Image (tube, rainbow, N blue to C red; front, side, top):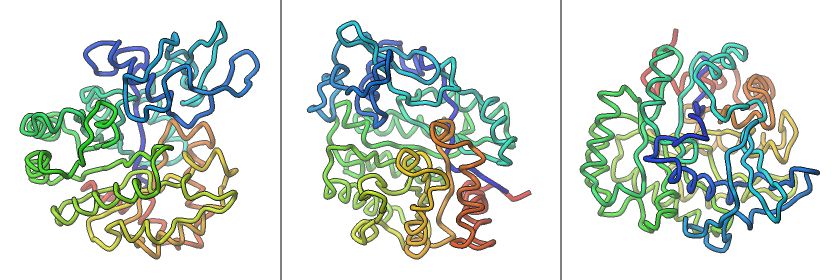
Length: 371
């Protein structure tokens, strides 16, 4: 079984994205595009620009930093805005996303072509927060897709019981298979509190009773220091220690770009020291193509020493392959993202290890029996 542990279906980026209205979704989109690492390009000649017209970039975590820029979700995977009459854009999704959405049917077609059996649908507010949309995608292809629930991080601490009840409903009634949380987005809405603090405890105490995995994305903001990143890993470790029987996944892996020096990728030992690497219910995803594709050419052999390090530090039974499809197709095809591991890293993982990291680990995590 080949199981992609990190995929997306994306509702229309020109709609309301599951928010109460388009305006609210638009504000968040503009904030996220201002801080997205994709280069800002001038449309008429692709000259390099910057994102300063979208937001005051000195304000790292605030929707109040947004500026009037005629920002819009355009087409072909682009988000556009204007500066002095000139159109600028960021190519955040691949050009094949012509109508700014990515349906379950589109994902399944790519999976069929690449030979991927299953995929787990992840969440991010700037890609929409509509749980019903994700559940519907899974209902269309119940033997191919599973989906994660999402609750707004910035609201949990205000009413943790209601947030916990919502997650219970999303899991037990809507049929979603786990929870995805991105603590960074609480800060965007002015909530600067650790996600393992006392005000979150009721929420987490109720969540772990559901016995479904938690997926945590520690977004690496370019203005965060290494120490701030390490503190986020320590919070994750504290959560694991508080709930030792719960399954938890660090999505995307580590902060790859922070530890890149030229053509050398090196994750320092202090990162692993701050992470619960030896805990039996802690898993780490690796998605090299989506982050390193802008630096290294396929098959990105420069990343192999880091993968060897992860095998040593974490173990073959707790590493999960994922892709970030369709986003990764800015850099590689879906089949290449699979062969990057299956073909070019066979010497690292071996036949049994490849079977684990490409599918059986995810199957066990998500309670899916192999065919």
